[in-house]
Image (cartoon, rainbow, N blue to C red; front, side):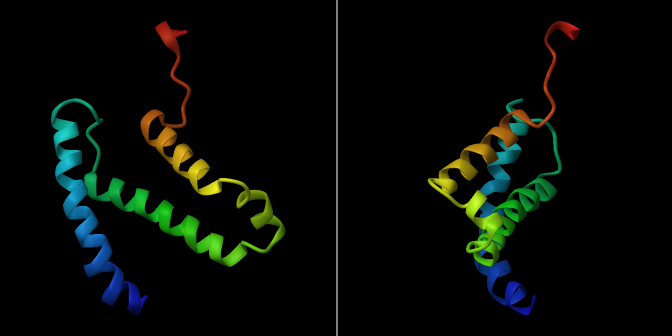
Length: 97
């Protein structure tokens, strides 16, 4: 925890949020993105990425690690993250069906 405060917050989290915040605000204003809490959304996305990498380092050589971290897993993770962010998890029914 102390390293996150000293290293990650000033060198990663704040600079990344400073870059992402205006992009997300513009996307919301232009109707390209739903009106969400930008800070929470940013932390949830970053949290998912950080957690994925922490787990990767922790379980890489386990049975679970061998299931998840095979082949081009980083590209697969990226594609899945973008898919979830763009489309969500709930199947949208067409024409009220």
